[in-house]
Image (cartoon, rainbow, N blue to C red; front, side):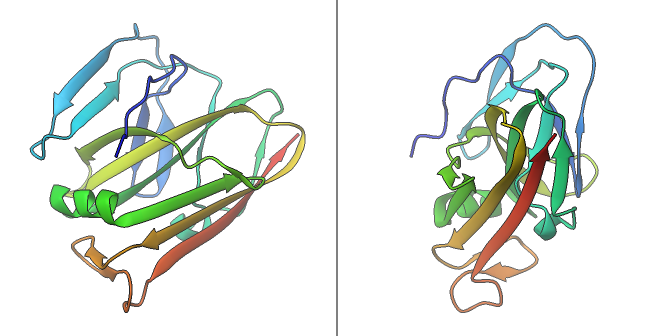
Length: 179
């Protein structure tokens, strides 16, 4: 499975918290760092920031966020998604045993750039993050659909997911109004 691509210079360094996304804002010279995880999965960590982009999680209701979001026309958009678990091995199980399908206005966009696996500072949880630049959307309402299929049973360390469990798949539908 190929999970890395050339990362465009307009990628934004993100700070993720349990239920919010913040964009850092300072001027940093672009550099990249390759790190090896304990599972020998290479990790790309962008260390630069660009302003005036909107970071939009592809999950809204699943993350207790508003279903509708308004974005100013001309604003470049980066979609993000990920998974949290109590261990790196649970994260690797998620990567290997799930299928993610994300569409924007019925166009497949789930070919996101793998960002990293990391341990969150605010908790003892690990997370994996993907991002996908979509650029500037046309004026009007846009539909963003997130579908996650568990190909086999996995755990995040707290709950079981997959065939025969309470959560066999996940679905979310969000709307972006570009004005």
